[in-house]
Length: 224
Ligand code: DC
Image (tube, rainbow, N blue to C red; front, side):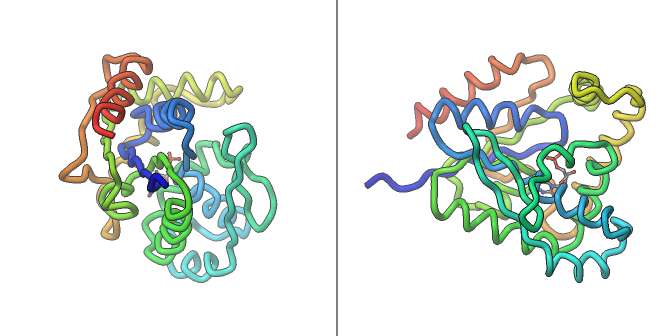
């Protein structure tokens, strides 16, 4: 029997991680786990409970009663908060900032990482996030670190948000949210956003999604 393989894709917001991870997942027939969705779900719960997403003590308590599960329908990940499907509620600018805030809290991370490792122990997986290659799956078979200039990442997110129907946004506000998250995610003490020493770095600024996906899929296939 062939062992499970794991592929880690890390990098800052807007670097193209989820698009590339979805292509790899389809191309190789393995599960795609979007770990950011888990932190977003914790942030949604905090907002609903009127807990400030920077109130570490309350978040550490709250997360003990949070049950997060994922499921796949036609290859698309759905995420559940205490049994409720919240997939479409976690993509707002408020929840993006909230997710970056709650992700600083060690108790929150420990619970999410446990769930992520559990999933990877049962099946082959491509996982995207900030700490997958450095902390969640340090023995992943393949590790990639995607980057792009902050201007390019802001523009991608801005266009995505417009396509989703958000109207009250400006390119400047999207850029400053991304800059806030970059700083918060890479400066936290516990499992910060960082490139693993053995990760392959790909700057996606001037590449098309197809070019990045092709490059990554061929590296994986050549080395399997
Ligand atoms: O990938 P995303 O934009 O959905 O992630 C939302 C936030 O969650 C991100 O700003 C930081 C946090 N996060 C994290 O700390 N670790 C991960 N593995 C994934 C996301």
